[in-house]
Image 1 (cartoon, rainbow over the protein chains, first blue to last red):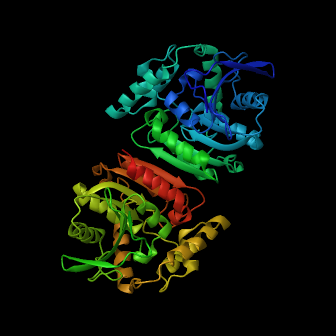
Image 2: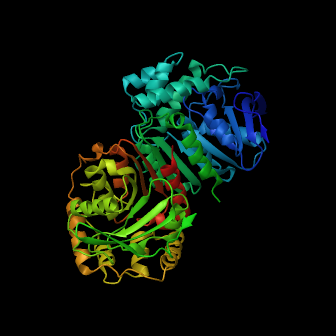
Image 3: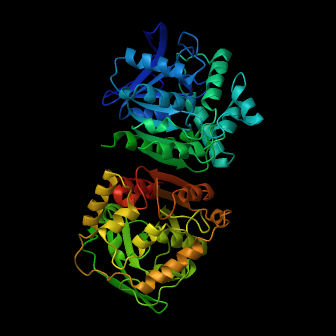
Length: 281
Length: 281
């Protein structure tokens, strides 16, 4: 039996370490729950219901807002280490011994850090549109990207530019995604503040300081699925290849004619690939 | 209803262009047939029944020996162009308007060339453990690889070295593959001659002359699945990444802790990934 969906799941709150975390939980109550870690400036409203509900047919899916984001209290830390520590507090407060993590972009940095800090707490890891600490060109953006990523109220046009390829197919998929992500219309989170933007940008900048040896990745022995589009202008795709080559037990899947938002472009295929990975015996 | 299997399919023969081609056909009589193009020195005995029978549950699978190989008559050409021309003669003789191609290693070179020469004849393309014409380090082998790849009668040890990673898991998977590939014991093809080895080595050498622009890949508009292990010592894995980046409509999947023979290491996962790709609407 499915408990709630992306659009019906009520906001819930749980306190840990002095922070009141907002979260939503839905899907099948079975197996290891999947915690979703979102992108730069994202709240719980920035996921694609086709993905979250698609994954939730086989497992419990949990969305949450980390410290200072959306309906969650506190001040957003300006380091990935700080964000990861808070996420661990949240997971432990929910009483889980082990979770699967799906980290997208900034969420993928946090997912890696959680796995390094608390390997026991993580079963499997999906790293989407993300890169390792010290990866290639991860702290340098074109002026166009910087402007589109930091507008006060991100528009459809900003998303189409940042997350999708210029092709007609990709742009159309972007518009369809935009419709889907606005399907929920009750109990929405407020957008992230400028304070969140500044703290996250600072954390991303530090994480991106180049270190070609990628020394910590070999410590992660977990099964990992690394996924991206073929031309990600936010976290260049070569970083996904490098994650794969340094994570000893990882599988890489890259999708055609797509950028950072490849998962929103191919939601069904993405759900199928992630489900196959998470369900593997 | 399934017609025959890897181990029971009879040898068949068909003539085209003065060549008598040996082939085997089995599986479900439905949809677009899948033609398998094998590796350096391979005959029809070099496939993994777990893969061929796995794929054949959803489509017709065709193995064949190209000119001069196994039970097929004629002299093996010493160019990829010549091999591709002969493969096209064979496909047309069978009366197919269109096929899917799964090209492994040398077979992947031929599959690309067929697609360039006769785009109408190909629906979808799976390129496994292979690289583009002019790719990176595709004509330079270590002395160990050269010796193992050219022994008169390739042994289990040669296969374990060339096709699998040094890890215990990979080596064990290699031994299990070796058992499976010897399951068929009736009407086997003779091993390839030294003449085949010399002609194929010459063709591979010419295909591998570096040309970093990879100019012809953009001509291929077909849907392509590019697959490899993370450390292929025969056709370096970076070539799979580069194929993906230059083929406009391709998806890339790379598997952990594996080499050239990744497909034989993860036969069930490989069948699942290829079936998902070929069945996609």
